[in-house]
Amino acid sequence: MKSRKLEIAVISDLHLATRACKAKRILHYLKSISPQTLVLNGDIIDSWRFSRNYFPKPQLKVVRQLIKMMEKGVQIFYITGNHDEFLRRFNQTEIGKLKIVNQLILDLNGKKTWIFHGDLYDHIIHKAKWLAKIGAAAYGLLTVINSGLNLILKPFGIREFIIYKNLKKKSTNDSKPTAFEKAIAATAVTNNYETVICGHTHIPKDKQIMIPGKTIRYINCGDWVEHFTAAEYNQGKWELLYYVDNEDENALDDPEIPDNKQVYQSLFRELAMANCF
Image: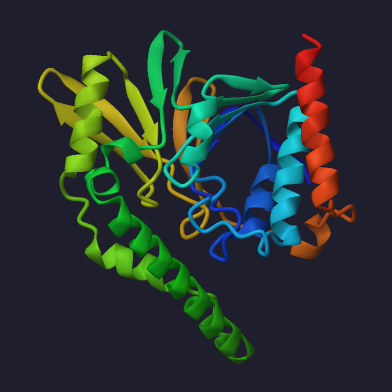
């Protein structure tokens, strides 16, 4: 499969280590691109629902693919989110081609792009974290129910559907900026950012937000649980990609499926390389 060359790719909300994660689609997308820089924009590993008993091989393949990309010279920035907030204490840590950051500011053709997860602008997360965790647990239960329904309906030729995606669509009004979007745009104006890219809400958007005296381009790169979207930068412009997986899953399977030990060995090798510089 020929990969598309990109300068920057931004993906968010993979939620590895959960049943909601769509690992095969993530893997197919990663194999379809050849970026100079890959930004993992938060909630990549879901520590809220992490279990040692659940990290299936398709998700290990995603980890292995990220390591392969670094081995080929791709710079990966891991921006921390609320579900992987345990990594925030490691801000600015570098391991080979991997760098953990809390936010990323890029100067592209003289214009600043601000990339961050977005949870810091979610009042529920900070004022009632317990409520957010209950919501995450309910989301997980709905995922299990959804998977069961899809298995039952598959023999009847009914396409896979995602219940929570349809519910969210009905409850979302995109006619005007939300309080979340306004707060982000106001911060962007203060710091002279032209473009902001976040995740967190799982709702992909690419819109202009009018703030007195300035217009901010707001891109939400969505997620890889419901929408399968990415923000991509190439030839001087950002685009929001809705990924359509037309590949044969079996053709893309890597015969070398790493076990946990191999994954950890690869990570330690990256750490050793980093210490050589």
